[in-house]
Image 1 (cartoon, chains in turn blue, brown):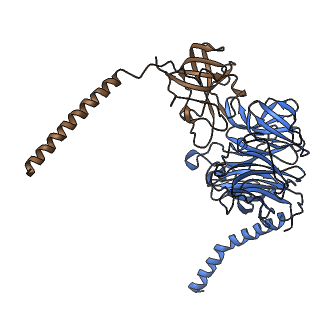
Image 2: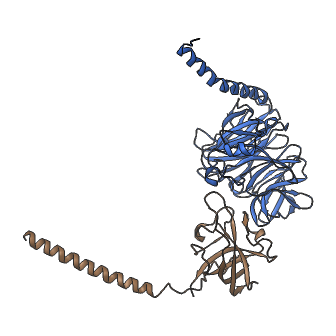
Image 3: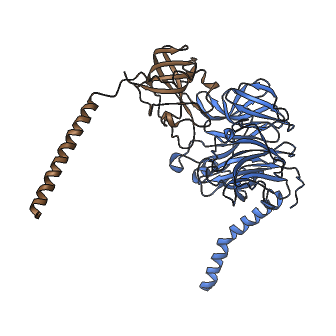
Amino acid sequence: MKIPVHSFMLACALLSIAPSIVADEKTDALSSEVAAKGWLIYSARSDNGTWDLFLSRPDGSAARNLTNTADYEEAAPRFSPDAAQILYRRLTKGETINHDQWGFSGQLLIAKPDGTDARTVGEEGEYPWASWMPGGKQVVCLEKKGIKIVELATGTVTKQMPRNGIYQQLFVSPDGKWFCGTGNVKGAAWNVVRMYAETGEVNPVHEFQSCTPDWFPDSQRLIYSSRPEQKNNGGYGCTQLWINVGDGSMPEFIYGDESFHIYGGKVSPDGNYVLFTKCPKDGGGSEQNGAPMYVMRLADVPSIGGDSPELRALHPNTKDGPILELAMGWEPDWTSTELGIEK
Amino acid sequence: MNLFVKLKTGLLSFVSFMSFSSFSCCLLCCAGCAGPQLTDGADEHVATVGSVEVTAKLVDIPGEFPPNDLYDYAYVLKYEVQTTHRGQAAGAILVGQYNPLKPRNEAADKRAEDIGGNVTEFRVGDVHRLALEVPIDEYCMAGIINKYAGQTDAPIYWAVWTNKVVQ
């Protein structure tokens, strides 16, 4: 049978676009799945040229600029555990948000989750690396002399303890029993570590070029970025997203793409999804305009983006689940709480 | 003045200029032959910051410094103390230098606001006047790369101020 040339070409064209249609359908399904699962908050460069805080649904809809301040750079917002408040840092206009030093920068501010009633807490550089303690009435800070828990209403320091090598990105577990952070272990820098809050005892969670840890809602597992030794990118490798249990015994690769560095890992409040950023430049992009944020299902891990031959050889069980692209942002956070904000 | 005279005058001026330049260069070179000016590295900063002040020779840089463009770190170096000016330190000591690829007067940042000095690069054999704090863990808010880990329990000092000494 002779097949007309134009029919053959049409068939080829249809076959070539079929996978992308399927991928779009999968991504659309993911989008519908997460749309009503609370709210995201993130920092991003806005139309006024500075970094502002934004709120959106987890599918990216209902996005709004919460601060819209042309005279400041605002970054690193976090919902309080009950989502009744947010905390963030406010830097002077034009100050670069350093991806590793932001916790030392600017002033700490507390506001309602819609950005109203913002008030400064302390002066420039005070309350470094402040993050919420369970209950939302205290923050924990990471200073040179140690870890400090401070009552927000009075400024009273309720607990102080050595930091035992942790030097940035300190976050308390939802149950309040553990801290995680980036710290020094056995003469090496850049390890994700866990600290038992009662005794200060520290154990490594992931050694070698790991950072930006955050907790799962169960307080048992952590999500973080890591750049293992690799051949790709001229031997520099790509930063990947990993999870592990608190004692470090079950490291699990969850997402990577050899053309990007994955940061900002945040697990959804129901523990079923993960939020992250993909930046072609290492560091997460805070020094420029951030990077696109994405949502994926934890049921789809491990997944790999792009061709990524080295990653695919290392992780042949990849599921390559859909990832939903959201707006440009940096250091996103996620709450399941309905904030009473109209769509 | 015809063209020949102009050329002759110009040539003579050029020769004179070159002779003067060469003479000046020789003078400068001779000054250079005398070597850099001797200094004990003392100044108002190194004498007042930190709790320990020493003159020490840099005897070992283990490995190569990683790039400093994206990540900050302190790198632990080995010094041999020659003179202790303040506090307690003697013999071989380990000292963490923050972002050692940067000149000391450009290294301070939000992690390490108080550090400084006039050393521009770290070379084995150089002698420095150092203002130090100890232990490093209480002062350095950065990753610490310590290639001597596991070899000694000696405390590691944190370099607050590092000036060049020329003996």
